[in-house]
Amino acid sequence: MDLKSLLKKIISFEKKKEAREVIYSAEVSVPSSGRDIIEVLRHVRQELKTNPYIDSALSLLSKGKPRSIAYKNILPANILTLLKTGEAKQVMAGDLFKDYLPMQHIIQKAEGVMKSALMEPTVMYVIVSLLSYFTVNTFYTNFSKMPHMDMSTIGPIRNYYFFLVSAPIISVHLLILKSPDKIPLWNRVYRYIRAANYLLIIKTLTDNGMSSADAIAFFKKLDDKHLLGGIKALKTHEKNIDGLAKALAYYLTPVESALLKTSVQFGEQQRILSGIVERRIMDVEKIVSDITGTFNKLLTTFALIPAGISIYVLLSIVGQLTQRV
Image 1: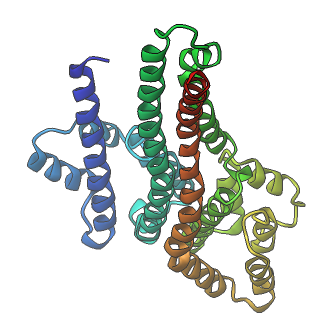
Image 2 (image 1 turned 180 degrees about the horizontal axis):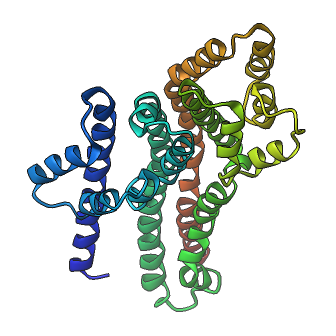
């Protein structure tokens, strides 16, 4: 990719981010102001001078397209699915965003902490690997010129060095990408954040007059094997909060699951659900920071792999030189 293409991508990313912020703010303001969303977006668009994403959204909205289609290339997939679910029940986008976005922002911050916990030791690993390669290559180049030096072990290490050091860290990243629920420590954070997001979605839908059946229909559209497996196991009559608790069994704590199931008997579903969500959101940053901090430290120890290779090469050469003295 050349510099021009890279700059275009960066500008496009910033414009999309800008469009998201505009849409979120505009949609939340529409119910209270009584103005039409097209009017609001046009006004903001004039102030911004240029934004192709807002232009595209305006064009589709003007043709009578629903928000879930008009915002398709701008908003994340989970938000679009939320919009589509609300549209089927004639719930305004602003009402959904007003309840969902503030708490979702906290969850996103926690997800950012997870990414940092993974990236920081990875950057350190790359730096140590490069320094280690410089050491191994320097030793090999200088000492291979000496007569009777046995470089049969060091040669392959030097030739296949980047494969040897990249395999462990790439494996960790692939496992986290493909199976985040199977990595020790990481799976605890993954499940906690997923549960917080799912519970927040249920709360948002029910706060806006939708049912547990609507929430189950929403979850059926997600790519989550644990959740889909739980929903598949539900009986026909379990399309209520009790059924949701069963479907989310993999993610919820036993206490949360019990509270949701018993809330039906006392007619306290909304209050209990709100309490569970608020506790999850309140604790999410601390829990994620604590667990990912430990994960970060463990992953940092991977830097011992390239360091160990350079130490092995050094000791091998020093051993041969000692024998010759």
